[in-house]
Amino acid sequence: MELISSRNNPRIKKAALLMNSPERAKTGLFLIEGARLCFDAAVNGIEIEEAYFTAQAENKYSRKVQTIKQKAKFTAYINESVAEKLSDTKNSQDIFCVCRQRRKDTDFIEDSKFYVMTENVQTPDNLGAIVRSAEALGADGLAVFSGCDIYSPKALRASMGALLRFPVFTVNNAVEFIKECNSRSMKTYATVPDSSAKNIADLQYKGGCVAVIGNEGNGVSEEVKNECSEAVTIPMKGKAESLNAASAAAIIIYEIMKSR
Image (cartoon, rainbow, N blue to C red):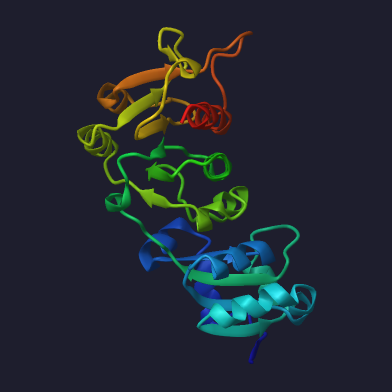
């Protein structure tokens, strides 16, 4: 297996560019780092085009690296200097994979299941935390409209690999997606910080449904809210006007799953 020691190696330069969202969109590829994320990609059907690691990393994470090597189409050792070029973290584990994006469309939605939809969630940490909660609490999938790139390195890390394991798909038109769900007799819930909305804990969620989590600053858009079959809220005490998007999502997912 070859050793790449130059930061100007063509493969390394292309891999490093994948830290940027426009490059990910153009190529359909994304870059991940760390033993756990790269291993999650390898065992969850993500196509690994290239894998890079230092000799020290292979020794330290030998079992995971062996699995990654078996799945990758191209593998190479790199030195510390090259690892620094590819790293997006302060304490890198010196394991990197260039992967092909896995896009799902709405055709896989099942009318009887529960999906979370994020509308223009901007912060990678929030998106990662939302999908982590959705997976942990038993939701069936996540629809993402606009906002943060689901293949952002920060979002992938915040999700603890859930973005590589959980059914996640992008939505090109939020209003049309809600209309489609309504046409399938699924309940669609806009989550709002409004005391006049229905208490999230008072509803029964037996059939198929979608809960919409809005933008951190502006919440669910009026257009989407108007299409949803119900507006729901989390009752709050104290002086806080709203919850962080990820915190609100965790509570909403828990309440819906509790009654299913």
